[in-house]
Image 1 (tube, rainbow, N blue to C red):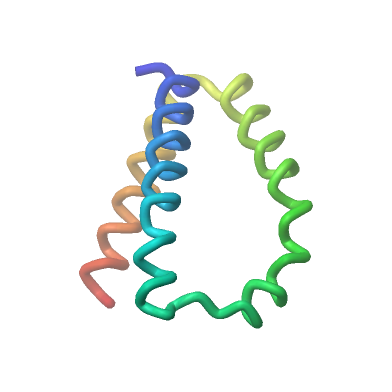
Image 2 (cartoon, rainbow, N blue to C red; image 1 turned 90 degrees about the vertical axis):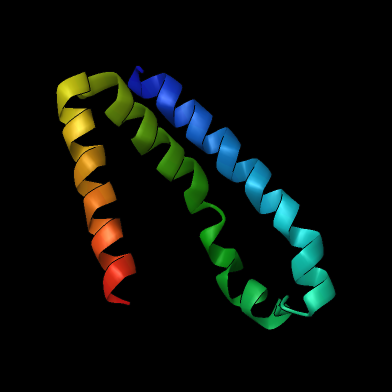
Amino acid sequence: MSPRTFLATATFFFAILNWVKIPFYWYAGLFDFTLIRQVLWLLPLVPVGVLIGRWMVLRVSKAAYERFILAILAASAVLLLVT
């Protein structure tokens, strides 16, 4: 799978997953609007992250990208097992 296809699929998957969780969080009373207001200043950084991600996908080789993804997945697995 090409890096662009992988990123597009992962982005779409997590966007849908997060939108599906909203009604359940609301029903459980887990929304903290004070916290949301505190982190609202981070919203302008989203386009910066998109541009950095696009730059990486267009410039990094597929082999290097796959090694990076595997390293991140391995680190995530270790963190999930430890905590």
